[in-house]
Length: 589
Image (cartoon, rainbow, N blue to C red; front, side, top):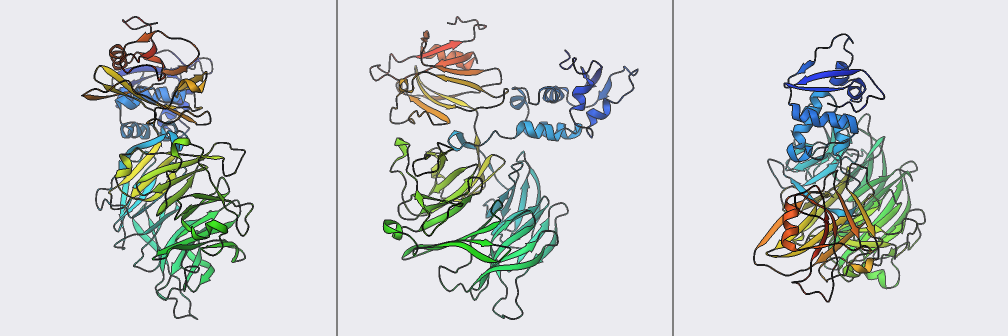
C-alpha cells in the first residue's frame, strides 16, 4: 500500500489486520491521538519488523486508515458499513473523535434539508418532550416516565426509569445529568445517566407564604453556572427560580407573580441569552376570545424586569388584535421572533433595540410561498440564524437572504418538508442540535430527524423522463460534492410545481415535466466524493434520449448534467443533455 505521508515521516510500519497486510507511516497512526491504540503501536522498537496482528475487520480498518490519512471517510464506506459498525471499530482503536468529526452533518440550511430518519424509543413510543446537545447532536428523549439517550450517532446509549409517571420537561444541565419535571408532580428532579440514579430535587418553598406549596415546573433552561426553572403553585403563584449547577440547590428567586391574569401566568418557555446576560421568558394562553400572553427579559443579578411586552395590550394599529401564538429567541442573531395567531405573520424584534413596539413583520420574497401562511396554532424555533415554524403539520423555514440587512424584506421563506410529511400530524415541538433539527408531532411515535440531505433524485415515468432535481448550492470541504452554476437564471423556468430559481437561494430547485407514464419507478443516484454535478447554461451539450440517460444513471456513469424547460417543447421531444464519463463502454460527448 502506497505511503501517503512519506514526506513528513519516512519510517513505516506494517499491520496485519484480520489476515490482511497494511503498510502506513508512523505519523499517520499518531494522528489518532496520543491515547489511541494505533498511537501506542507506533511506539514499537524500530528493529521489530514483524507485522503487528490485530484481530479485527480489515475492510473497516481500511476505511479508518483512510480517515486518518485524509480526515474524511471514503465515499464507499457509508454504503458498505453502518455507522454503528464504524463507531464500534473506531472505539476499539481509540479514534472516536476523528470518526465523529467526519460523520457529523454539514451546517444545517433549512431549504436544503429533509427528513432523513425517525428515532423511536422501544417503549412508550410517543415522545412527551426532549432535549438536545448542540455540540454533538445527541438527544435525550422523555417518553412516559423514562428517558432514553441517543448519542452523536443517534444510536441508543441507555435508558433511565424515573420516579415520575409522565415527564413534561427536560433539560441536559451537565454531560451526564438531566433535570426533569412533570406537570402533575412538584419539584425539579435530577438524574445521573452514568449510574441511572436520582441525585437530587429542588422544591420551591417559602416559610412566610403557605401558598407556596407543591409547586410544579413549567419550563427549564440553563446557563454555564445556573439552572432556571419556572414554578407554578396550585394557587397560581409562580416564579422563576435560580438553581446552582454545582450543588443542584436553589440559590435565588426572580420574577414572582400572582398568576391571576394572562399577563402574570407562569412562563412556559425560558432561555438564557448569554451575550446579554438576561433570562428570556414568555407565556401564551388561549381561550374563547383568542390568544394572549407576554414576553419578559429578567436580569438575574438585579432580579428585575428589563423589558416586557403584553399582547393584546401593547400592540399598535392593525396589529392590536393579532397576538402571538408562539415566540422564540435567536441568540446568535440577537432577535426575538413571534408567530401571529390570526394572520400567521412572523414578527421580528431586535434585542439590541427594544422599545414599546419593536416589531417588524417579515414580508415573503419567495413568489411561490406568498399568501400561504394562515393563523392558528404555530410553533417557532430559532436555530443557526434561521427561524423554523410549524403550522399544523407543515414545517417551513425563514432565512435571511442578506446577512448585512435586517428588515421586513430581508428574509425568505420556504418549506422544509414534503407535502406527504405534513400529513403525519400536527407539529408539537421543534429543537435544533448538532446541525440537525428534531421534530415531534402530536400523538405520533418517535422524533423526526431533519438534516442536509446529499442526494439528487430522478423520477422516471415509463419511456419518458420527469426529473425532480434538488441541487444544493453549498460551499463545502473538498471531500464533499462540488457544484458549479453558470449563465443566466432565466434558462430554467418555473412550471408551477417546482420552486422558482432565485439567485439568492442557497439551493436551486428546478422541475421539468417531460410526460407521464403508467408505471412509476424511483431511482436514486448518490453523488460521491469523486463525482461533480455541473450546470452550464452557456455552452451546448449533445442531447441524450431518456431511456439511454436512465440506463447510464443506473450504471453510475452520469457525471455532468444540463437541464432546462422550454414552453415550446412538447413532452415527447424534451430531452436531457448530459456529459458522461468517457471511461464507460458507451460513447460520450
